[in-house]
Each structure stands twice: as structure tokens, then as C-alpha cells.
Length: 390
Image (cartoon, rainbow, N blue to C red):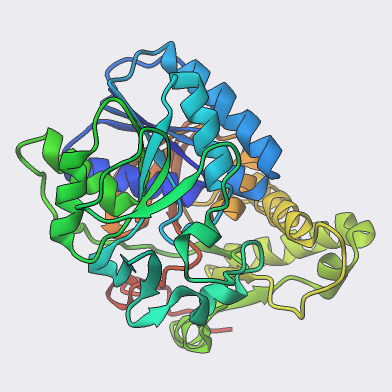
């Protein structure tokens, strides 16, 4: 069994999708349990939303529990543009497995994400010149990878394929092509912790399994009364909302009273959930958004995620959803918490990062997730959208 620790849920789902490409039996859990008949066990944490100290403690506990299951490999999934508490989490893992060196292969050249001489590029732009500079939780202020990943205990290095690897430290790999991904996969070994993007994990699996499964993506379809949750704070493209509107998906934005004042949220959440359920019962598909000017409330992001999680649970309690689409890893974790879902079974990689899953305890519900920074692919959307107008 291969085990993966992901720092947010959509990253975990993305790894699950990679496993499906190789025909693996994939299980995603939010806690570590003893498992049988599983080829790929993915532990979906929400450590990116925690403090650095809390994230370290979480990874320490999960790694200790995973070691008792005896996996042949523990892979640390990180954000491909290096957001999160990467050094803290990796060093926690390194301490438990008793290794002093970690190799981080974060880039995804086929997706236009490359690291050249220690500088991160998205397409032709330096990372700090992209929309990631405005990330609400981890704004990017430099494209230099050793400035993005700040060392805690071990030093951080930026190295190319031909450079000698130090005996200890965190090594961030230069990657400019898919061929270099393959070369890095051949260079890593059992004496080091391995971390990186889903693209690198795909490359690693390719070095383990001789035959890759089907790469054609199955159709992503949805019918009436689908709920879309746009919980990610990542900046949205206006054309996306227009596309949903043109395809008769009703947008219901979070009321200002919930957004700006947590003390008023309980009654307003009840009212909002009733409004959403009424539209779903009328056969509409609904998208939930949180589009307001950022407030000054402390822990605003957490308050918004909790509000969305509570709302979805209230809706599900009144209306049996068949399809639930969620954007953003932290939002997904919060929704699953309020739905009391700890175990999910991926069955379809509809597109890169867009994963469909069944959830334990909800036999008729299909949950589809994607990272907040990914677009909903044009060719997947609205083919079966309900034509009801309101």
C-alpha cells in the first residue's frame, strides 16, 4: 500500500484521481484507520488552514499512525505553487520516519508551472506576478522558492538535476520539462522523504506500475437540483459566473449579515438554507457564492467556511442532494465535517483535479471537488444542466 498525506482535501482528491489512472483501489480518509484491500490510501488533512505549529502536530500524529500500517511509501502531497506550511509539515514527517533529507518536486511543466534556477514560473510569468500574489491566506511575495519555503529546523536548497544532493535539508527541485520530472523520480530513494505535486506523484506511480490505466476522462454530468459551493476565496473570473447564469444555474450569494457579522449568522443561516431548499425543490440547480468586499473580522476565512459547512448540512437535512460540487480544499473539509463524512471513494477523474466520489453514509450522493485555483473546464460543464429559468 502507498500512503499519501495531503495538506488540503482537493489535493487529496487530485491524488486519488491519479491513482484511478493506474487502476488502483483508492480510499480517501480524513482520519487514519486500519484498511484492507486498498492500494492507495490518501489522508486528507486541512493543515493548510491551521497555524504552522498545529499543522506540524497534525502531520506528526498522522505519520505515526500511518507507520503502524506499514506502507511501502509515504508521499507528502503539497501545493504545486508551494502555499502552506511546507517546511513545518515535512520536518514533522522526517522526524517520525527518521530521515534527514526531503526532496520537493512541486512543479507541473505540462500545466505551465516550472521552476528554473530556483525561480517559479506560471507559464511565462514569475509566480509573484500572477494572481497567486493575491491569495487570501498565502499571498506570494517572491518567485524565489527558497524565500517561499522558509526553513524551520533544516536548511532549504534549490537544486537542479545535475547538482549533488546534501546529506540533510529540504531540497526544492528545478523542473522545466516532463522529462525532468521523470529524471527526478528516478533520483529519489528510500533514504529520503518525497514530497511534491500530483504531477510528480503521477510520475512516481509510472515508475512503479508498468502499465498505466485509461487516461480518457469519463463524462461529468449532473441533472436537476444540483448544489454548487464556491467557497474558495481565490479570485474568480467574471465569465465563469456568466457561464453559470447562461446555463440557468441560479446564483445565491451569502447574505451580508452572515458575511460581516458572525453574531447574526444562526438565524440568517436558517433563512438562507430555506431559500436554497425551496429553489432545489423547484428543480433548480443552485450555486452558493461568498462575493463581498473583504471585511475586517478576525478569522474571517474560518467564519465563512464554517457558515458554508453549516449551510450545506442544513440543506442536506431538508433535501436529499444527488450532486454536490465543491470548490476549494478548506471549504470541502468544512462541509465534510458538518456532514460527518470521513471516508470517500473516488470513482471518476472527470478532468485534472476534478474528482467524483461516493461518501460513506450517503449512498445516493455524488461529491465532486476541485482546487479553488483551477477553472471548471468548459467541456465538462452544463451538458445536462436543468433548463429551468427563474
